[in-house]
Length: 359
Image (cartoon, rainbow, N blue to C red; front, side, top):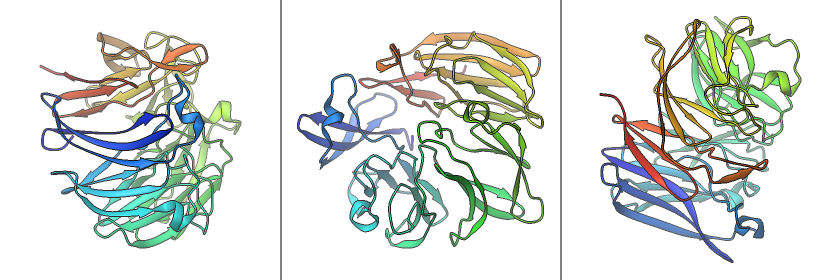
């Protein structure tokens, strides 16, 4: 949300035609302020009833511009006032981007727009000048995952952390030089969460690293077993690391608290969402001082809870949306919520809902 505006990036499907569209709405009323569409050629599977597909990356806003990454490789910079196009790049033509591999969200770091995607020509991650769209650098000849990039501050440097299907790597955000890399084979449907940084700890999925203090580097400290079932906590949502604890959903639905330095389980609960494959718990609006957090689960429920090493304390719960995405014989809602200006915005395949939170 920006200046009482909320932006949604999705697709309009009218078989066999498809349009990727960016909609700007008034955050208070929900009224459409402007909308732009770009026709794209989607494969047949995108039109199958119940499995409709579209862009999955989240737009990012910097100053007066908003940036989007489409599933066919179109990168667009538009102004936030009317949606007028400032510049556009075709990553399919420029870098051989494979369709439906741009699932990580773009990242703005200073004057750079950083994008991950599976392409050729050594372009797994690309840094563009965010004002002109011109390439600044490219790196990593690897297949990208669904995980979004993040910049952390460690060893007195700005490090760009990328979780690909082959590795987790930290790059010099200014030049794209690789500072450290750990070989880590992970399928794209398991490498989904965003890396989480807290002090000298970096959590990648469910693998905890201790970061170098004086020079860029990282050492895995837990778990000892590197099997995916041990080193990926959730394949649908991102953990919260704070106060020496890790709070996260697990792949089968339990919500857990782990000791951040050892990985040992402190407690677990099945009260946040039902135990099943595809379970999701997004953590938003968390306070490290009070432990209060907003949790949004795969059933479209928003929960206010207090999280601490002592246990899970639920304060309230409200149903906001019906889950409408088929998965494993159930209906789920995997779309992450957004919190801004005292409002929470949630969506499924058909609806966008805004609720006010707090007093």
